[in-house]
Image (tube, rainbow, N blue to C red; front, side, top):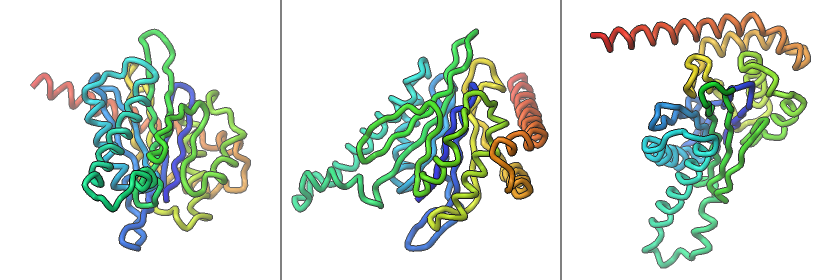
Length: 277
């Protein structure tokens, strides 16, 4: 099982997970549980997976196929696209059993609740109309029931959801910039890894924000080195209160944000030079 944390911040969304998964009875610690989905108008969303990896990745493939033909023209369209992908995946999987007379219809319905088929997705993106504040959008959906839920504060999915909820519940995230909340998201997952045998490996984190481009929803995948620096700082302040931690991390997060800006500026410069050539 996986632990996913999704947080709605001021005009941004954070999605994070750890990287442990089980295959063939063995634990692996390098799972890539977050994927970027790109819409027809080049807006981007991040999708994180908890549960059965292979079926979930197939669903994200279907999601990308749908997104490539769809523009992110309103707040709801990304979530509805995720639900369409779930429906397509369920139909695709059920067809595998159509010719099997030994499988009853009720067995097919129960199929998606079994461990090797069941998964949940957390999807984050930002919708923005020019001249208006960006609207952060966070959704969760489970393949077992197909229910789509819009999340306005935070979402926790996985085997240690109670612990994560206990840590996150007191915070009013909408008043904070994403740079202030990233350390807290990492801290939640580090605590989860210490208490849950089914969670482990390196933390993966993505931010969806229009801060690098005024009209677009951009996904920023945080580098391992940056996450390790924040984790090391967490150890220094492990006895501090949650709100004090947010304040203590201000300087470090300003430096990380500057690194992102520098990387983005260099990338844009290279792209512009390539277009001129």
